[in-house]
Length: 130
Length: 136
Image (cartoon, rainbow over all chains, first blue to last red; front, side):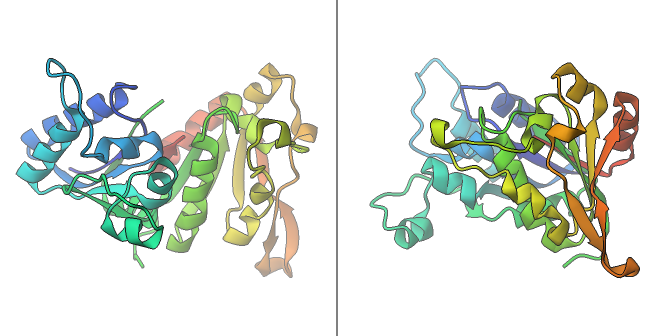
């Protein structure tokens, strides 16, 4: 089956980010396809490479990045949600006059159309959040 | 953009200003309108507060986005389902909600009501019939 996944909550604050990861990993290991993972609302915070959790805790961002690298996943951060919350790539930094970037290179910033397209192209959209 | 037409249901469950879900849901609806899908909106639980009229947000320092709902008809959003029990549980009735309409080009642009009051059981059937449920 072809899945689209929407992650609506930030890491550590909410288990939704963990649940989405475990769902994606399990689906991929079973041979399913993931068309795209779309990070929305506070979910955009899953994409900041500056995350530094305590050493005895899981690293949610790195975990996404490893899964994404292993399966070549398309992991998209909503641009409007990211701008509100200060998740920035090179292009956004230049456009908005910011002095830094923080997005992990495994993720990319794009528009909400990517979520709608993913819902159209996939057999199932699975939403993780409150 | 795409040949596929799916039945999209945007499910709104939260009050409008306590969290950002309501506003960011509306942003998806507006962007999604460009994809020419068969779109419905549903309002359940505290989500019914999103449609109330006379919202004033200056005291909480947030943008009042409630006028945007009145523009949904222009985005070809014609089906807005509001759960009757959710309204009643909160002491609300249809009179407390904005009057949302769309214009039917097949009937000389007659103005028609967008909001349909449905029971919880009917809402369950609407969700069941959707190809995609965006849950906010």
